Image 1 (tube, rainbow, N blue to C red):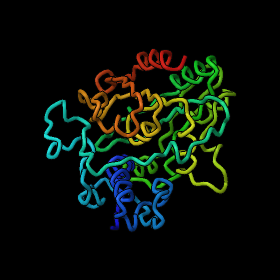
Image 2: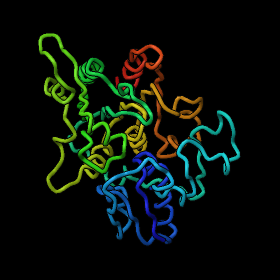
Image 3: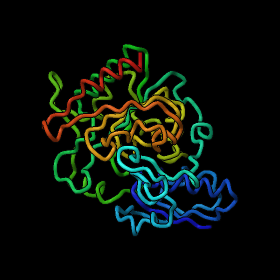
Image 4: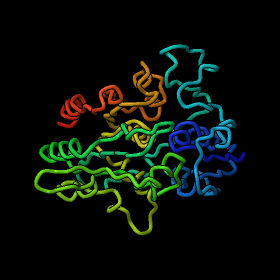
Length: 303
């Protein structure tokens, strides 16, 4: 069987990859056609064609209609669950997440490290500033706290040039948005520049080996992490693949629905049984992101 996919990243790693791996385990997989850069996610398949140079948010055109699960947020037609009980619950009869942690396992830094995953993209159907993001102030506080407690930090915020992107990411690139702030005594800096002020913080880009792709690098780095701090979204979902604590800041999105991130049979749990700590916020109501509960949870998990 040939599986063809070019949806947004989150849909591919939740709906597509576990189905393709299930086909592989059943001896039914012949070929995967996917987006450029995705081959490391299909390491188990010898015939992977990186065919697509753009992703699409149009599920009809993305190949999702050919999958057992065609919608990331629930599958009520199969599970029979309704209301809060259905949030995040899929049909798992043909769904097996690949063991990325075992396959890519290595501790590149040879020290305990936490991955801080960030994003700064325009959201689908939105014209406001990105809310699913960590600002300079909270990043400064996170980096400093983790340093005080003996952790190395690997910071990831893609520039949207490292892999195949969708329409939202394309729009973000075209506008040229930058995550920055005016820091007392320093001036205006962005988050990448902030990292240089901490000797315990490494940019994921700086850890890439010449012979390895961005996605292979992040799979290797994520596999050795002690835990993750991340907003919700595709990058946050990837964090849940590795069986380690995930503190997930959730200011927007379907993940705010009751039970979505806490149902024992939600896909976010089923990916690897990682402990997920959702931290909810309402910046659209207040126009201010409140990271207080996030920081409290970080202190509890990373002591």
